[in-house]
Image (cartoon, rainbow, N blue to C red; front, side, top):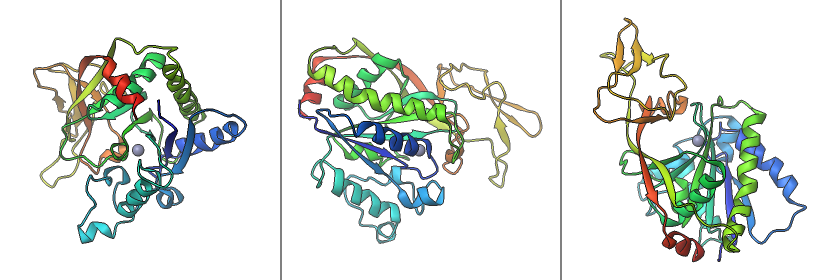
Length: 301
Ligand SMILES: [Zn+2]
């Protein structure tokens, strides 16, 4: 096992302030303890955090592109430069190399505590399985979405997002903070147990695989013309079948789901996704059988 350092990122979105507070609190508690695996802490987007906004020029959590960005326009973006700095500093070949990145986010949607994975990397599966096993957390597997890429954790060999809600932007909630603290505390413990053969991975991982997103109903001018249906409010992770209500428009018309497959919605009404024209995303449930390769790859990080 060569995991030596875990990077904990908070404030990747500057108006998600509870993770920043949780890390401050944790950092104080931690100073007296001595563990094998070290944590590094960083505020992802400190300028946006100071201003209380999500980002300055572009979403930082879509700014980690595989190859360096040669687009002159985007190169002047604060977030493009910040993404490069974070990788240069804490990336696997950086000056303070971290093998794992944990990116802490909050959502205004009623998601509870959840894990977000990007793609099907075995190392991520291994880490997610440890957490799902301990806490029973739902996992949103985001993949094959060409309109959204460049996520922070993808720039590290292993990493995942912890997403907790519902909480408003720029609003402190001690219950949300406590949930972050539990996860941060447990990470190192669980990895340590795996390292010392004290636990085995669960036989399977249950994931909710991203299928696509839908926008609000809009009028001919492009303005939002319908709201999340009251029956759909706060019903993240709850199955939707054909005929179930999604939106209610100004005229009182119910917009229903007319797909043939069952779907499980996430990020219902997320405030930050309005600009991305996403009212909610649909997922399907999938069971992935764990295998030893996950642990082998994780151990060789
Ligand atoms: Zn966020």
